[in-house]
Length: 332
Image (cartoon, rainbow, N blue to C red; front, side, top):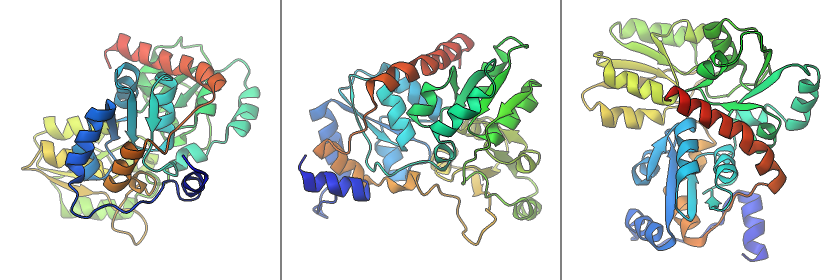
């Protein structure tokens, strides 16, 4: 990679290149995957085109499990930076690519590792559980990593007298504390997408759709979760819409998941829960930085690449592996 390309990636997050408008990007990406022995892992919050070209679509737990077991030489991660880092930690011998390295995370940004380290030092007898939505450096400071799918079960698997720090998401932490009856020390972080839902607008929407089920992700604020008919991880929400006989659902999470809900339930209606601003959407601006064009250029050129220092990989792999082991034992 020449210096100009590196500078452009550092500045923009990706290297721009003209693409023939007549090119069938889906066919080209499929060809390049075979040529380079690459696999595309995509989060549910990606745009529909990326979800449709992916080899595996899932939430953080599923994506971590896939990253750990893949035999591909190249992992193209259509998600955000911490997810690509997790893939690199679990498969350090693989090349991990991210279509746009500026696809960050407001929640991860809300917990700088150097500040969390000082916070942790105040509670020397506490076990540290961190939500996977955090940096590799923060994972390296942890005892166990969790996702929204397994957070409750992981806390329940620990002795009742075990003191616990939970970070960085205060809303998920409060939800886990309520579900488990445990007194958790919470870091004060949050996801900007899940914090913008409007109680007033959702109440009015429920009045207009009295038969709709209101479903929410546990990263939402407690006032929103109290209104919900079902609270669950991204995968949990998807499964609920499939198993529940209702034909209308109001969905309080990032709107990208609705693509999979509609594919799985073509006869049902899905309404994004309204945020408390003038925007009619609740898209994560970081997730949506990835596009099909950037994905194509990324796999074609072999960059941007995500790397993690070896000492961080060594320290961070242990708490992630502990999460995977507990999840496997619990059948999650």
